[in-house]
Amino acid sequence: MRHHLRLLLLAVQFYTRLPVPRWVGYSDELLNKSTIYFPLVGWLVGGVAAGVWLGANVVFRNADVALLLSMVASILLTGAFHEDGFADVCDGFGGGWTKAKILEIMKDSRLGTYGATGLGLLLALKFLTLRGLPPNTVGAALLLAHPLSRATALTSIFTHHYARANEDSKAKPVAKKLGVADLAAGWLLGLLPLLCYVVWYQRPLLLLVLLPLIVVQRGLANYFQRWIGGYTGDCLGAIQQVAEVVIYLFLLAGFAWKFI
Image (cartoon, rainbow, N blue to C red; front, side):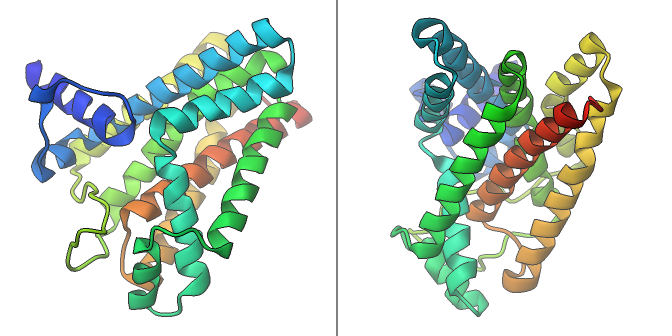
């Protein structure tokens, strides 16, 4: 029990800005093992985002302000960890034409034109899709999307290989190994909020959201494989961010066309 608590806290330490007890420690081996709790961190981030959205709605009675504060809260909680990965991928694959150049650009801490443009459009799309949902479903959307998008990114650790041959001080640490049992456990944690929502509200067609998520994961992972021979931490962040937006888009379309 203590071992799994340590792995969970390590995942919280790695994927958020929340402090954890010093005894948790860190090692590459522990990071690999803690990866199964990545979707559970999504529960935390989604819960905080939904809570801030609900509280801000009560206080300010302005849906736009509440939604923006909710996004700010989730970004502060994670330190824009995944957004940074998405921006680095935009810069790297937008400005690089060889594996070496793409990896070099992604290591650069500076934000380029491709990254700034991509990140701005991504955040705008998040805001507008959530704003377009029925107000009573926004909290649920956040609680569903954060764990499920992280489970989607988790799959790439299982299906593909880490791209960087040699680590260096500028490369972000990232989990590189995932077994079948670990993937199943991670996906169970990612799917649980969705399954609960489907059963409670009797919305079985909501499970169709898994289809575009499969397309996102396979499409992006294979694209990264073709250009750089696998994934990096930035690539996983990009997959998570795109998957999160795809979930919001699916929900928006579902409510608009009344099939969920």
